[in-house]
Length: 103
Image (cartoon, rainbow, N blue to C red; front, side, top):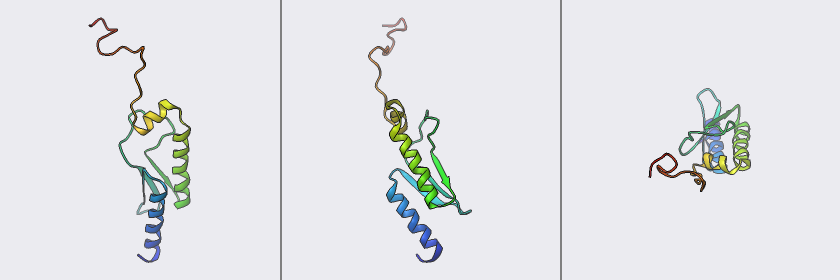
């Protein structure tokens, strides 16, 4: 590819390689976007975003980096929710019908 379209494609490819787990693209309006790959979380932390956007490639890198930094500094409970892990059930938690009058 040559010209502006080729430059954009190359830049998107670089961003894809830099940020595993993100799918970047440029909209027809010229805005840069990236969406997380994988399943969406049902109860994400307030700062978590499925999709981020920016005016340019560098801004998109910064937006993704902020998301990744937040994920890396999140507590264990949030990290499980963010990455799709299943938090352990505390030993004191009732299992099945126990604790509800059932046996």
